[in-house]
Length: 170
Image (cartoon, rainbow, N blue to C red; front, side):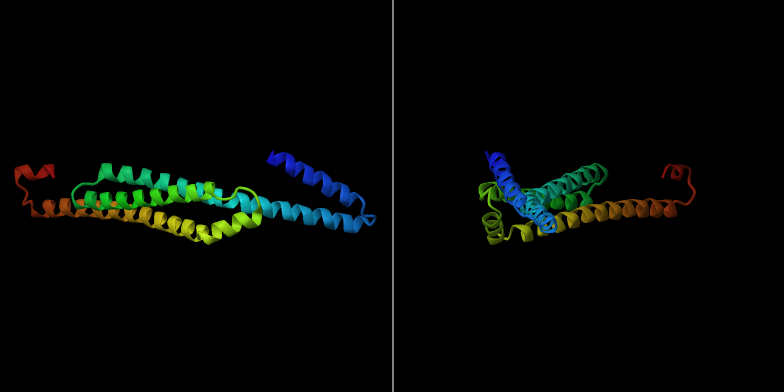
C-alpha cells in the first residue's frame, strides 16, 4: 500500500510538472523532486543501515573474541571474559534500539525523525559503535599481552637453563 501511494504521488507530481511551460523550470522541478525523494529514503533507511553496521561490527568482535579465548589462558582469559560481558551488554542495547526503531512511526519523514531524535537514536548507535570498536581493540591488546607474557616466560626459562640435559625441551 505504501508503494502504491508513492506511485500515486509520483504520477500526480509528473502531471503537474508537465503543465509547466518552461523547460528549464521543469528540469529544476524534477531535480528538486529527486532530491526530496532521496532525502526521504535517507531518513527512512539510515537508522536501519546504522544498526546493520553495528551488528556486523559486533559479529566481527565476537569472532575475534572467540579466537582469543581459544588462544589465551589465566589472567588473560579472565580479562577476555570481562570483555565478553561488556559485549553482551552492547548486544542488549542494540536489541533495545532495534525495538525502538521498529516500534516508532514507519512513515512520514518528520514524525520518524522527531521520534528517533527524542530517543537520541543516532547518538546511542554511534556510542555503541565506538564502544564495540574499543572492545575489539581491547581483545587484540589482551591477546598481544598474553603472547608477550608467554614469550617472556619461555625466554626466562631458557636463560635459567644452565645447559643440563633436560633443558633443551623448553
